[in-house]
Amino acid sequence: MTNILITGAKGQLGNEIKELSLLYKNFRFYFTDIEELDISNPKAIDNFVSKNNIDIIINSAAYTAVDKAEEDEKMASLINSTAVLYLTNTAKKYNIPLIHISTDYVFDGNSYLPYIETDETKPLSVYGKTKLYGEKHALLYNKSLIIRTSWLYSSFGNNFVKTIIKISENPEIKVVFDQIGSPTYAKDLASAILKITEKITNNEIVEYGIYHYSNEGVCSWFDFAQMIIKYLNKSTKIIPVRSELFPRPAHRPNYSVLDKTKIKKNFKIEIPFWLDSLYECLDKIKKD
Ligand SMILES: NC(=O)c1ccc[n+]([C@@H]2O[C@H](COP(=O)([O-])OP(=O)(O)OC[C@H]3O[C@@H](n4cnc5c(N)ncnc54)[C@H](OP(=O)(O)O)[C@@H]3O)[C@@H](O)[C@H]2O)c1
Image (tube, rainbow, N blue to C red; front, side, top):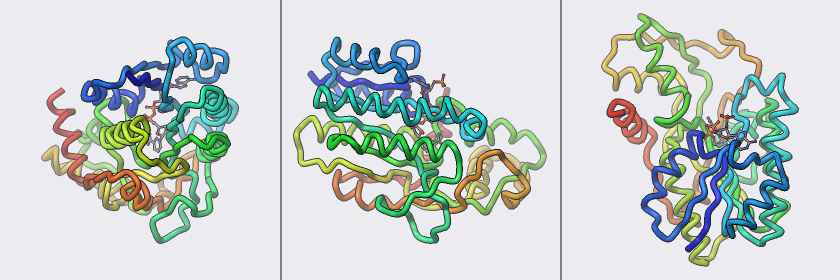
């Protein structure tokens, strides 16, 4: 039996991993969130890992309030950066792999081609900066695998999809069209993480380091909203606007498409098209 620690299990990604975990009978999962295991407490991490003979750590905990982070840098830095160092140190001490999740917000968005893992990072926000430091900490250990993802949504938690559903009763809504990226259904990311975990535990040749994962295809937030409204069969008018019209505390990259060639090649992962996954998630939200 392989013992797997999941941190931040009450979040979007953590919940999706939990749902899929039933398919992995050879894994014993330890789902924790801040009440069970606060990742900013290094002693607690060490105790938990040693007491439960953890074989692999998957860190899905994070400080994800992107705008709030601008005025709460201390807390964002503690969770996204310092705590990752604590997890890395523990993983190193017990010689177990660490899978850590990062973000497209480590880039400045000035590219016009999908970002590859080795492209220069230049975060525009406190959140992006703290996540980049988290990556740097994880990379101090040679059994860390970092997955950068973008525009995460799920039937769990709050996200763009849920917001659009909520405001779809309005006759019209304004959505930015000048930020381009790729949505990621957290269930697809969870499935990729578990496949990678399986390969690691089967001792299949694994290259650690940084990887990119999102759904296939590219869209703007405006396109994304259009497809949600279309699915809902609502007559809500969506007005495309520039980001300047919605000034927010944190700057976001205008272009944050991630190139996923490396993860697909190294782990033989097939990635669904974003629209297919969006409809799957909307079906689930409707059913629930
Ligand atoms: N959401 C996105 O659009 C997006 C985009 C790109 C990358 N990512 C990355 O993807 C990963 C998963 O994101 P997500 O959307 O699933 O995040 P999420 O829904 O915000 O979940 C994160 C979980 O971590 C918990 N947490 C916070 N501080 C903690 C601590 N000290 N100890 C243990 N748990 C703690 C949170 O609890 P509270 O809710 O109580 O704080 C929450 O349950 C993160 O690394 C994130 O940076 C997210």
